[in-house]
Length: 295
Image 1 (cartoon, rainbow, N blue to C red):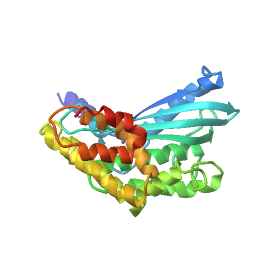
Image 2: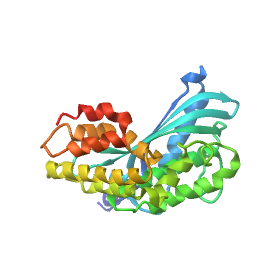
Image 3: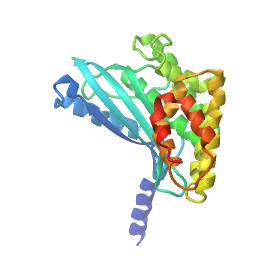
Image 4: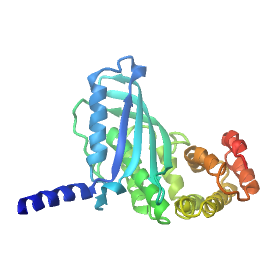
C-alpha cells in the first residue's frame, strides 16, 4: 500500500509542474530541393526539445498553464552550416471557462539566418550571445510570454519584454539582421521598441481589456463580452492618432482580424457603426473582413 501511494505521489508530481510552453515546431525545407535531408529533421527535433524543455523562468507552471504556440520555419537555402529562412510564430491563450483559444501573437520574422551543425548543443544563456538560432528563438519565446502575461494582468509582461530587449542588445553586434534599427521597419528591433515605448501604451492596455474584460466573459454574458472587446478596440484610435499606421498596430490586426470579424458577426446585437468606421481607418488592409461583419 505504501509503495502504491508513493508511486501515485510521484506520478502526480510529474504531471503537476512543467516548463512554460507547449510549442509545435515545423521545418519546411522544400525550397532547398533537399527537404528529406536528415539535418532538417534533426533541427526540428532539437528545436522542439530546446523550446519545450528549457526552463525560461523561475516560476512553477502547471501543465494546463503552458502557453500553446507554434513556430514554422521555412528554409529557403543552406550552404554547409549556414541557413536562410523565415520564421512564423503564433501563440494563443485560453478563454475563461471555454474550450476556445484566442490568438494573441502572430509574427512573421523575415530576417532569420543562422548557423547550425547537426546535433550541436542548443543552450540559452541570458547574458551571452550563443548563436543567432538560439537568440532569435529565445527572443520570440519571451515575446510570447510577455504578450500572454499582458492579457491576464495589465502591464504584467514587463519582465519578459525586458528579457527580449536584453537578448536584442547583446545580439546586435554579431552581424545578423533583424536586431538593428536599419534592418527594416518590421523587425525584431521595432517590435520590442514599439511594445516598450510610451507612444504605443494603449496597445498593452488593449491586450488586457480585450481579453480579460472582453473575451473572458464570453460564456457568461456574450453581450457584455462583445461590448468589452468593442470598447478596447476603440482605444487603438488614440494610439493611431498619435502615430498613424504603426508597426505594432499592423501586428495586432494581423493577429486579431479574423477573430474580430467572427465576434461581431454573430450573437447578441450591440452598436457597431462607430467600431466598423474605426476599424476601417485603423486597418484598411483588412477592410474586406470589416465589410463582411453582418450586423
